[in-house]
Amino acid sequence: VPGRSPTFVVRQYDEQAVRSYSCIEELVTYTHQQDLGKVCADVLRRYGLQRKRIGFELGCWNLAPADLSALQAQLPDLKISDASRLVSSVAAVKGELELECMREAMRMTDLAVRTFQSSLREGVTELEMAAAMAAAISGAAANTGGEVGLSPGTILFGERTKLPHGPPSQHPISNNEPAFLEIGASKHGYTVGMVRCAVLGRHPEAESLHTLAEEVIDALVAAVKPGTSAATRAS
Image (cartoon, rainbow, N blue to C red; front, top):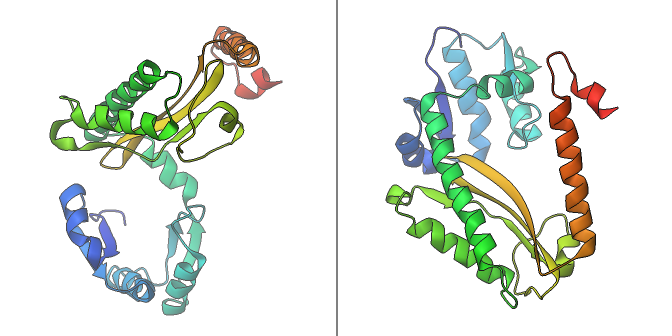
């Protein structure tokens, strides 16, 4: 609401966690999921918005159609607009506190990748690799108070690299097999992800794809000039 401080509507169960980590001071809580529509409607009425046009992130997977329907049942004159792009464009501009969270998360992501590269040996399993990276993050001197943790990652060895995603398993890597890592460290909800591939020994097919990827990246970097559009380069 223009000219007003933000209000956070959260589950009562999560209230203390939100107060600990959020910069928003005004919190309104609800107890059960079926109460969400009524509580949100009460907040909008308090601000005199029950007949106004309200923007929602309609493309957000955390906004269930049932929740929106419950709100509309409480406020039938409310006008719903899709503000998905507006919210994302505002969120794209980070403040200094947010940037520092991302820098710290990036340092830990980088540590996880280095651990992945140095721990890759014949016979190591995907689960053992995940444990090695988690131990490196939790034991890092720079991880003050353990505030940075690893989000669930994808670790795939050998034939399992054909999967688009997958949790780590007891599958070990053998010599001359590829390895795939998708991982991201997170601080206060700011996750910095990275994807890395490796080969233990030699793997001509994977090495050929890597060479092709490098050529594509070099061509794109060379083509970046003022006034050049992504559509032009893609064609």
